Image (cartoon, rainbow, N blue to C red):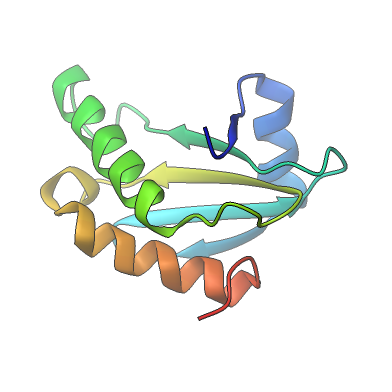
Length: 111
């Protein structure tokens, strides 16, 4: 496993309030530094995205894109990916392109 999961509500809230956000039509990314030295990732989908089946598809698309982009040794970051209404309609490679741009803008990955 390349990363740990964000599971607790206060971890997500910390990322939302203190983190830097990057927005696109299909994905919102919040990134903040952490002290544990490991990368922790969380995925959020609200009911605005759709029903349970649609939300699960959005999470699957984000997770598939994440495996192609996230590096092994990125260091201590907390990252939260928030699905938007357009996410379940996208293919994973399209979301991967957006995700890569967000992570490059934040300085998590290089080219």
